[in-house]
Amino acid sequence: MDSNAPGGGDSVELHGDEEILEVIDLNDTEQTPDDLAEELEDVEFDDEGAAGNDITGDEEGWETEDEMEAEADDSDLTFSKHTGSVFCIALDPQTNSLCVTGGEDDKAFVWNISDGEVLLECTGHKDSVTCAVFSHDSKLVATGDMSGVLKVWKLDTKQEVWSFEVADLEWLEWHPCAPVLLAGTADGNVWMWKIPSGDCKTFQGPSCQATSGKVMPDGKRVCVGYEDGSVRLWDLKQGNALHVIKGSDGHQGALTCLDVNKDGTLVITGATDGQAKLINTNTGKVVCSFSVDPKARSSDDDEESNSVESVGFCKTLPLVAVGYLDGTLGVFDLSTQTLRHRCQHQAGIVHLQWEESSSVVATCSLDGAVRFWDARSGAVVATYRGHTAEILDFTLTRDASIAVTAGGDHKAKVFCLQRPDR
Image (cartoon, rainbow, N blue to C red):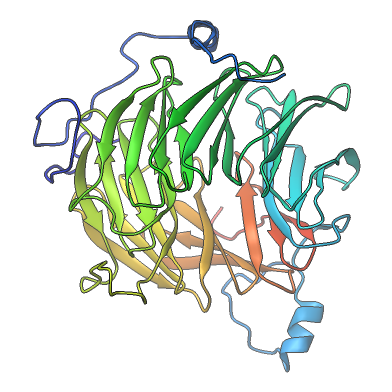
């Protein structure tokens, strides 16, 4: 993150009294993944644990919507094994060649994005599979359904190696450098397990949904957002909350999403109150709030608030992107805390993701298209279509050469990205 990041703002904090943003390098002492994994081994766990594209987006020439749905398929491969909506999708981090999808049919599939060949069918779930993620070394894949049934599969043997059941599942994430799995549930708990032993530790939040969570880059903390609008930064080893952000400077609606910058000094959160908030993770202070509508005040009587659905930090410039339910994409400048571009979709934004090495941000929306936006100009550089229903999730390969999507049309698709700006 650029050292000229913004300052100011107040929030509830448990430690420290700084009033300005201090961008501090949390990685002053170099640690290897093995060091972090060893630190997690010291954590005391409870004994309750168990084992041709449309470059401009111009639709001129289409005579009817039916023709557009039938003919406008820019995808290079369609995965059709699911018999219900496909809710989640992820790529293996090591090779970016394998994909896991989870769906309404109570199943998850691990498949090759080059030919669609199924490597593993993950069965035994009791409800729609809404979370599916690979471990940091791509050796394990975890799947979770809405009812709280969690399963971990070993890819080389194609065997289930661990299972557990919690309250209704909200999110699921692997530790960035150890075989440790974390999950947030509807009862407000965050769980952490060693895999495959199943030793566990719980972090008890407020008595409401733990709606979103992300392990910090240092591997020592997890940031969690809750339905009551609060945000907590937990110490994974000690099990205590380092900071609690709530009250007048916090969100006034349920948290929907969050992202962490690459050095872990900043978190951006989004909520149903139409606000995105920038938080300094060292002080626990809210640095500023972002909104595309200056009149948007999230009060109890504001039932029509424009919910924030996805947020993300640019990897190359001091910018953040915020996607809204009304289809607005806001690109904000961190240095000036101002709106740089307002980009409009015809339908609500579901998810956004920045490319790793450019100032291009990709979005998927309820209109079934994936779009790529140049954050410098605010212009669409490419649009890809192919789904006949809404896109519910998507992700990009590290080199941004391929996008894989999950749709309400029971399909996942692979798009090889050939853009004129490359």
